[in-house]
Amino acid sequence: MIGIGRRAAGFLVCVFAAMCIDAQPVEPHCGEEGVWIQMLGSGGAELDDRRGAASYLVWLDARAVLLIDPGPGSSVRFDEAGAEFADLDAIVFTNLLAERTADFPGFVAGSFNAERVRPLTVLGPDGDGAYPSTREFVERLIGPGGAYAHLAGYLSFRSPGGYKINARSVPATGQRRWAGFGTKNLSLSAVPVHHGDVPSLAWRAEVAGHSLVFTGNFNNRNDIVADFARDADALVIHLAIPEFARGAVRERFVRPSQIGRIASRANVGSVYLGHRTTRTLGRESASRDALNEHYTGPLVFADELECWGL
Image 1: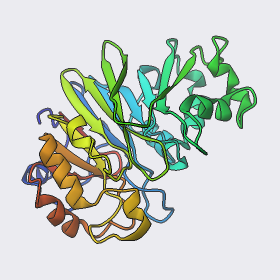
Image 2: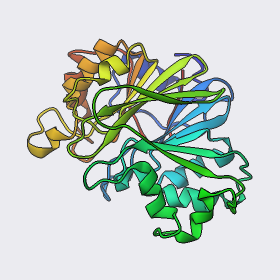
Image 3: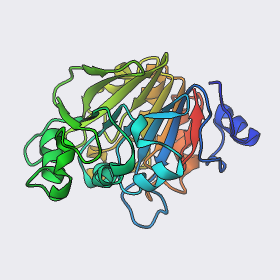
Image 4: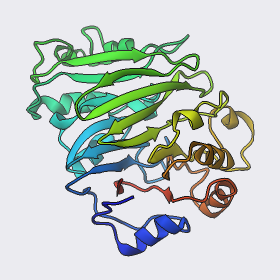
């Protein structure tokens, strides 16, 4: 990785030696040039971890072009990061649970003065059973009959914010790769991943010659992520459970040793561990040891607002 920018030298050594348990504090703003990943939130859904829910920004030349999972706290962090809503090419959801989507209406309401003029694409999983599709979900939130019906104009060209939201649903069953979005700055693809009964996706972003993969929550039942993340520069993956976890959580999340196997098979450049829940906080050494049995490359235990250049 190059273009590290404003990070402290000590943090740099820790990342490349893969020896640090936690990253050191860094400035919230990314560099002025190149591709960067920023953590808007690094925690789970708990109310006692002093972290926002897992949420991510991708920057290109000081412009935030992609927002992944606008969960609780992400709109505040977005502001603190210095991002501009008008710069976004897309917003994507890995799933439609509250911890991935709760701030979405806040982003829409807050965009009134964002001076955005081009449409905004919003992408997420298709529906299944009790779970709506992304298109239906957005309608239920901000459609004419939705919970926030006063925002319904944003779904039309009469939008009070000057732009229209285009919500699209991506297949979340099977193993077929979807690749239906691209701009001059950004190309996106997705594959279904298994997260219990919750329709879920992993996303791959191609930006200025770099590949970044965001897995969201999954348990790797279909063993699809390693191929999807093949040769990616960055794999952002969730550290939700410890190695010794038992019971229902293993139906929804990967363990550290599985993360290591996936990263090794995929030959990724670096691994960033987000969604650090109260189950794994304080157990970083054990998680790292289990992961390093299979993967010994650059490894980061992510914290709020940290930013890394590729």
